[in-house]
Image 1: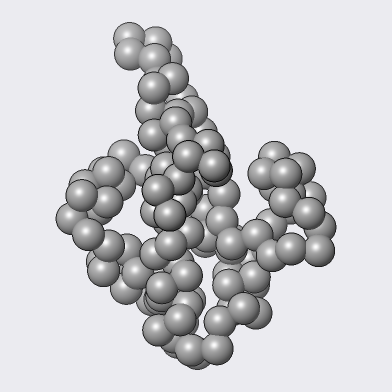
Image 2: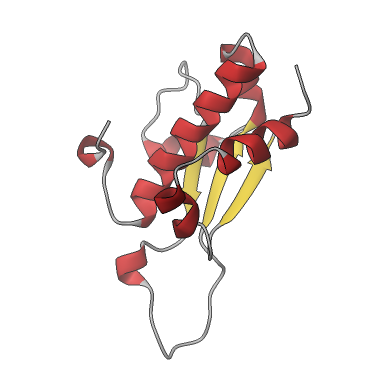
Length: 116
């Protein structure tokens, strides 16, 4: 399989324009594996793969005029995605779905409110 960071770049580039425009102030990060705290934060059972997580305040919670905090961050986990995907194309699709899902959290949506 191709270099994972290249797959992430391809996935982000392939997102619809309305999603790419939402990424202006959001960092897309790659981490090897989720930490135990990530499973707790997302209520993901230990025996399930976690493909990504959103870290930061929801857009509706951002404070203007206050001290700047860390920028919002969408994290994509390399290990789980590569374990579940058998081709570069499948990985790119999963990365796109993960980024869209985590952007939903940035905009204040809960898992059960996601449009897909």
